[in-house]
Image (cartoon, rainbow, N blue to C red; front, side, top):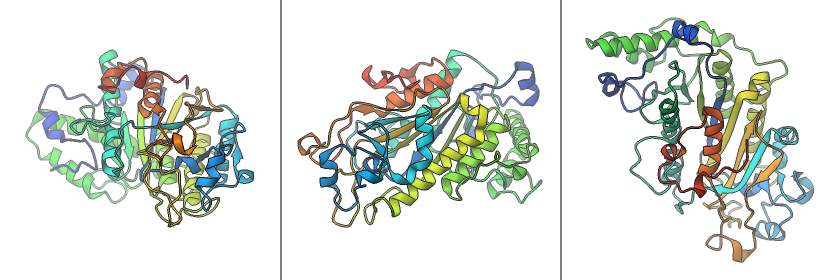
Length: 413
């Protein structure tokens, strides 16, 4: 059986034995069809529920300091944005992007579903159908399906890529997606570096198949993988002056930059970073959360600098399953909350602004008396970023069940 952490979600066998199999068009086909699409969408999921109130801090709110006497960021240490909001001091790498008008912030955003379960909330946000547990595919895969419904373009096996050990829920669906745990160590059939076990099993499965369609799909897929090997990823060097932090997100974004610069036909890329579940010892200006935010912001800023002129055609969006309680708990941390903040970075993004209606932190304005109230549906942010990157697709197909308000543009692009 094919390992889903390597290649196609939900089984290549089931897809390949039907006439609906999307073809992997390789270098020759791309040469005939012209250059690959230039606009690309990069999605980052902060798993564990990041504390949006200590990421983008409403320092002008009087109740902020009262709710967080131990973990609140002193106003004089906040990186002020607009005299009301400011960034955590560990996020200095983001301030130039914001000042340059490339980074937009959406506060009090998230899923309208009230769950405080990590599993359910992540599933709802990745499927794009809050409250609905029976959705088979992910919103990003449906976005690519909607693009195909609008226009048929040649695509490579690298059209949709996830950097990580497993294919994420976000990319589940009928459009083939590729998951790579480590670009540099990947090999096909033992050529080059030592192959990952999944690669060997995958090639063996295809080589031994008597199904002509399956065999042809496997050959095309491996030709596409060889395209990556020919790009010599082990020799990749970031642009001058770029220094990625040595952590989960930094390493993954560095590899996404490799794939994008190799011009392999990547349209969408997904990655994630963990460690945001700060129930205890969260810290304030320094500490656990500050360390995560430093890597998070430095990794994204390095990626942006590394992409150089190509960044003009990239839209990057961040999301987390929910925020955290407005009031700190008894162990120096925060518990599962509701609304959060999202970042949107792009060469054509109308940045330098905090978007969304601010609900306030007065006790009588909190959600259930404990959380930041949600005023912007996360689908508004994703829908606008998707339409910008992939074109005017059918957003109701991408986010089924969403009302008009959940898809109304914020004016981010």
